[in-house]
Image: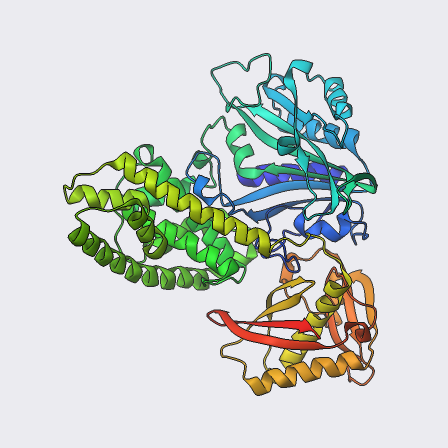
Length: 592
C-alpha cells in the first residue's frame, strides 16, 4: 500500500461514518502564538475543541502536514521525520471513548487487515489527580485484545495536554504494531521493546485543567486521534525502515546518484539530507524564507544542516540541493502550493550559495586553530559547528586528514557537553517565548486580534499595493503581523497606518460574525489569506463601516476571537517595523 492509497482509504472510511473532510491547513499557524509550526492536526481546531461550533459539524476528518523540530538531532534513525503527514479524525462533543476506540479498531483490522496478534495497546495508569483508565482497557478487551497485550503507563506516555497552562486535556490510548515479520510477537506486551511501533493515538479529552492545577470534568468531551502516514505505510508494507517507502525512495535514489554512494553504507547521513530537504521544500511552499528569526531560522538551520551532511558524503557540486529536491514535487504532486516549484528551488539555491561561503570561512578558522594549537578542543569544535556549520563528524574527518594525534572519544565528549549547554539555553528561551496557552482568548488577545484585521486593510490603503498577509502572532502583550512588501515601510507611512487604524477604532464599528459557504464569502470580497486551505463552510468577521462605499472596512475569513465593537480595542501603537526575510516585512504593535 502506498501513501495515496492509505490516505484515500482513511478519508473514505470516516466519510462513510458521517465525518466531514476539513482542509489540510498551512504549516504556519495563523493565530497561534505558542508554536512556530503546525505540529498536529488538532492545532487549527483549538477554538472548536474549546466549544465554538465548527461550520462543518461535530465529526471531522483530514490529513494534515506537520513539522516538528524540537528533536531535530534525532533525525537519522529509521522512523523520525521533521516533516510528516498525520491522519486524524475528531469528535467535537459527539461520540467518545467507546465509538472512537471501535472506529480505530475497525479501520486497522477490517480496512487495513492488520492481524489481531500484531496489535498491542497502552492506557493511562492514573495518578493522584486522575483515575486509572480501566474503561478504555475494557473496551479493547471486548474487541478481542487479550489483557496481556494491554499496558498501563503514566502521564509522560499516555496523557495529552493541556497545550498551555490551562484547558482541555485527558488520557490517551495508543495502538502498537509488532514490526518484525519473521519473529512472532510475544504473548505479553512490553512497551519498551522497540519492535513494538506506535501507529495510532486516541486522545480522550475529558478534563479541563484549571489555573489552580485541579482537573474538572469537561462539559464538551472531545476525541482527537492521530496516525502517522509514513510509519503506517512502512508497517503495511512489512518495512522496518520508513526510508524504503514511496515517500522517501525517489529522494534517497537521487542522493545515491549524485554522491556515487549507496544507502546501505550511509544510512544516517542520507536520511538527514533527505529529511531536511523535504521539510525545507514544504516550509518554503507556505511562504517562509530563510532568515535569522523564528520559522525562517528553523528553515535556514534545516537547509544548512543538509548541506553540511552533503559535504560529509562527498557531494561538492553546485546547486545539488535543487536536484535532490526535485523528487519531492513528484511524490507530493497533490499539494497545490508545491506548484510554486521555480520559486521554492530558487530559495534553496540562494541559501546554498550563502552557506557555502560561510563554510569556506569556517575552513579558514579551522586552519588557524590547527596552526596555533596543533589540535582542536571540544569548545573549538562547537564553535565551528555553531558559527560555521561544521558537524563534529566533519571536524573529525578534517583532523584525520592532517594526521594529527586525536583522542576522538574525548573530543566528542567535550563537544557534546558544549552542545547540551547550548540546547538547554535554546529550550529555556523557547519556553519563555511560547509560554502562553495554545487557546489564549483573553480580552487583550481579542483586542489585538481584531486590530490585525484593521492593520491589514490600512496597509493596503496607505501602501497602495495588494499587500498579502504572510502570518500573524498574537499574545496578550502585543500583536505581530507579517506581510509581503519589497521595501522598508517609511516612518511617515507607519504613522498613516497607525492613525487610520485608530480612527476606525474610535468610530466604534460593529464587528459582525457570520457563517456562510466559502464560495459566497469569497464572492462577497472576504479576505482569504490562506487560499484553498478553508473548508466549504467558514466564519466571516466583518468590521462594518457605513461611511465606506462597500459598507465595511474589513471582511476576513477567520476563526476568532474578536471584540464585538472596535471601541473595545482602545488604541494601538506601532512599535516596530522590520524585515524578517527577503520581501517579507513585520509590524509589531501594542495596546496603549
